[in-house]
Length: 141
Ligand SMILES: [Zn+2]
Picture 1 (cartoon, rainbow, N blue to C red):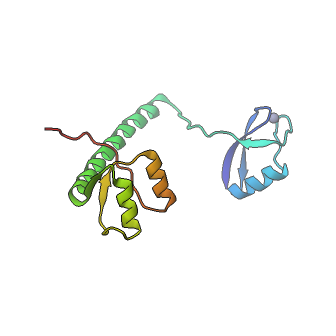
Picture 2 (spheres, rainbow, N blue to C red; picture 1 turned 60 degrees about the horizontal axis):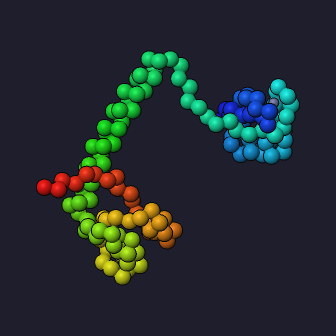
């Protein structure tokens, strides 16, 4: 069972249980779901909002979020070290090199470098695996 928060075209909010998401879709399409307040049948899902029951919970949540952010940062640094040690830096030729490797025109190896958003979305369209690396400030000394 799944609980959805719904609203009608008159912006009444109500909750309803459904067997699953597909059941909701079917019933909503057929007009089987009625607003309990005004009987309107053009129903949509209301945006889900996280519910915070009290301020203590919120503080714990912020503490936890900070912890997670630090863990992610450490993991990012590790990934970046690994990439810099094991992959060839190809600078702004990244998209060309990734494509050459994918189509067998260049030897299979790990590479990293810079690409524009357009280049990355082209690569993804061509089913070439790319992984965005968060940028870490490089030491220039
Ligand atoms: Zn209504």
